[in-house]
Image (cartoon, rainbow, N blue to C red; front, side, top):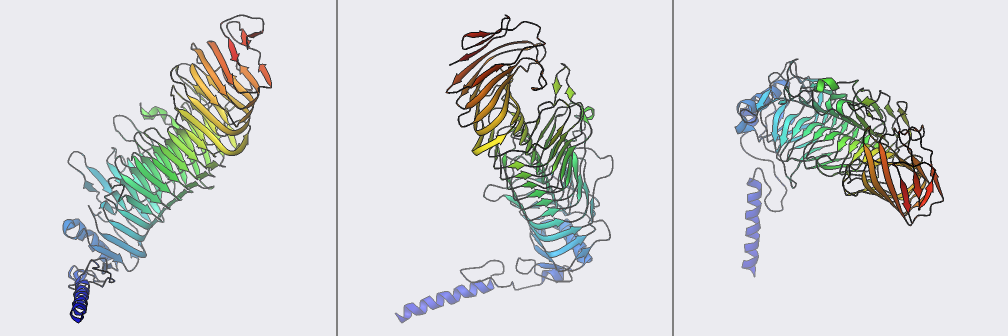
Length: 618
């Protein structure tokens, strides 16, 4: 028994010895010990010494130490790129510096600041023929950690006249990848600009994994961030700017948490937190914007746009009351065939063009403003243009302005009339969910424009899915939608509308079929509008299931109340199921080229005959 006990004691003594001798890892259950051995920092000329480990980082105390740190990693990057460094005092730079090409170690600012950062010659990263030119403290961070660091009075830009998509500007990093962590890093003043991608902290995020994503947390930007405001096919300059990050690249995994922007953001595509997202899996949470965000085509308080393939979640994010999200006056001719529609949103400019986006527990209190003319514009309190998107428990109380003149296309169609809404401006397709989300009625619009407190327009475009607008408790509103319609003769889109009490619900059907499931909703006036493009014809069926409908109103002319034009031939059929309709009101038809006959439940209404009929089946 004693021999056995003696063996156990010896085992633990050996284990303790191994733990003490280990310089970078804890063995067993014992706490870590400071590393022993040569002082690498002294050998490399750092005034604070240090071994370069997480327990004993090389200490940076002066501006000379800091420039030595940059030169060390730039000249001997592969040998020292994974070391740990720490600031022990504020650093004031008096001259431009060259960025570190690549870093995979740790830099802890310990709450200190770096002032006067200016980047001289950009670092070049990437394969030949696909290079990126990065102006940032680190051109690329690969699995690195940057913590507890402030930046003051930054000035990072490329020479005037520089064009192209491969120019990146930011303060911390041009590119981060492989599970890099940036935590409690704040850019407090200065300017960042690039013709292509400009980010307050990071220009581009790529790589990572679902198990080890790139993380940017507890960080902020107050600098002015700008990129090109116009693009063309030849120059390929899109100009994306973000208060925290310019771009989440395709295939990357990233989490942005508790980050905030108060800086001015300007570009072709501008977001208070992120410019554009191409990543299939991203999370932005507990973040806010209180800055001025101006975009030529895309502008959003949190994200400018989810580009094709982009998807993810925005949760508990807020566009605050001092913010302004707006477009420029007009740069449409300069776009030269590039994506031209303007999209402005309190949370996001565009969502769901590639895959599903979820927005939950978000608010907009800021001002949304369109200044552009002669271009299609969508403005939404939460999202400008939405497709394949869930918006849950989100509200907008901000002011919306769309006073620019409407856009008339080459067919003489007047646009912008119905693309301004309290939650979304324009909904595309048949895969939208708006749950317990709404806007207010604080909107200034061009004369003749209409506004929906939930959506300006939802066009299913021939989709066969379901758009859900649901409220757990009854939500009352005068006009929830500018209009709902299907512009294609294919598909049978369903609108499930629950818990809504509305004075008027407008819908317009160019062609095809639509199904309204209104069980649990109260609609005082269900208004069918003959909205047709000049020379087109409309033929289709509208099925309405359930709900309490007071009056069915059919507009076949451009009445002041509906705000819709009327052209072409129209043949429509209503099918009602489980509805107690109190009254049927057929508004007199005017301004039609042909006479009209209307039939309800087999009984003819009106004496004229013509090409238009409406039937209501029991």
